[in-house]
Each structure stands twice: as C-alpha cells, then as structure tokens.
Image (cartoon, rainbow, N blue to C red):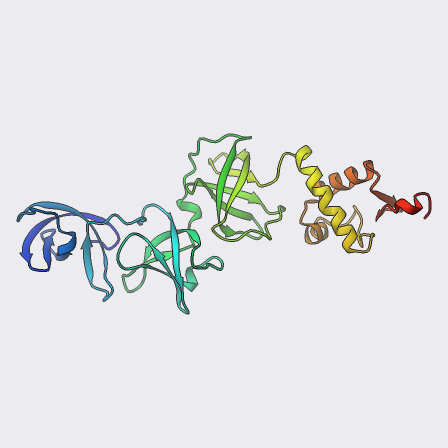
Length: 282
C-alpha cells in the first residue's frame, strides 16, 4: 500500500473499532466512524492511505483536498515554531515544514502547495516544486483578463502565479510586486502564450490606461524629494526600478505625461516639479 494514494481494498475482518482492509499482502484499519453501513466481508472499498496522529498507517473514506498528483490551495490553520499546519480535509492536519516554505505564511492564508512524503514516510506539504506540476493547457489567449494566485517570487525571473490555481504563468521581473504576498490573488491580463503553453501575465493595465496611475506615482515621488528627482531619465533601469517600481519605459511615459500636462520641467535633464508661483523663473 502506498502512503498518499487511493487504494481499492477488500474487507478482511470486522472489529468493534473498525474494519481491517487488505490488498492481499498488507492489512490496514478503517476506523468504525468511517465504515460504510451494511459493509460485508470481501466487499471492496476505495480509501485514501495516510498516517494518523501516532504515525500509524490508516485508511480513510474521506476525500482529501490534495493528492500527490495535483497541487491544491489549502487553508493555513496554525503557524508554530516548527512550521505551519494546513486543513486538507482529514482529521490530522497536514504539516508544512519551514524548510518547504517559499515565503511567510500566516493563519487564515490560503496557499498553493503540493503533497510529498518525507524521509519518515509521513505526508507533508511543500510550497516548492510547483512550477513543473501546473498545467500548460490553459484556454486563455493574449488580452484575456484572468485571476492568478502568487506562489513564488522568482527574483531574477519574475513572480510565479497559478492562473485559476491550475495554469502556469509569470509576471515579468520589472513589475513592482513589493505590495504582494504569497497566496494573494491578483487581477491580471495575459500578454503572451509561450510555445510550451505557459502564460505571460501582467498586473498593469494597457499602457494608455496605466500611464495616468504611473504619472501620479512619479509626481508623488518627486514631491518626496522636495520637488527634484535625484536621477534623470538616463538613469539605469535598475535605479529607476528601485526608486519608482516602474520599468524604464513606463517611467519615461509617465514623465512625458507630466511634462505634457505642465506639471514638471526638464531643466538640463533634471526632473523638477513645476513651481506655479514662479512659472518663468529658473
């Protein structure tokens, strides 16, 4: 019998506290509270195999929310010094060790995880290794509006999300996700479909719609520097991203919008808030 999988087993023996099931080689207990009514010897029952609170293999007719074959979104019930415990639909909560986390989680969070068997043959959850388990056969095309759950920050690659909690997708690395946390669901737009079926997505609106928000953001940043930015449009993309959270292209569009609306001046390349009281002075 394999821990973490469904098995069809026959009833071998009835006892006061349950049914002993067998695959012909091994026996396992199905507790009485889960035993089907009117069950008879040699009847076949489909059960899930896991370990109880005393680490003993046990059968259940309850349907777990997750199996080894498919990642799932589970609720964090508790976070302790050793890790987190997740609700997976069975009496014993599923353990998520700290070493298997991809970011901070809190009680009440809903996070995407996979099921694995540790060295002691106990079933545990992991936030790692999800990328290759997600589906690449999405029905979405460029321009579609979708919802995606963040499951990992890829740093040099981008932000990994699961569209509909099923499909593999990524937000490009230049987009600001500093306000986002693991497990959060974002409103996104598909910007590309790779040859392997994985999706490129963005949390930004189309450029002409996003520009107004970006311009307001840049103006606030200028004000935070007493009206003069300490860098110009010629700054490196890394500096611009660090200071504004915008790509260099988005930053330049925002500056252009502010200049067109006569809210800033560009004096020798310096980006300054326009002083309405001294409009003609330097």
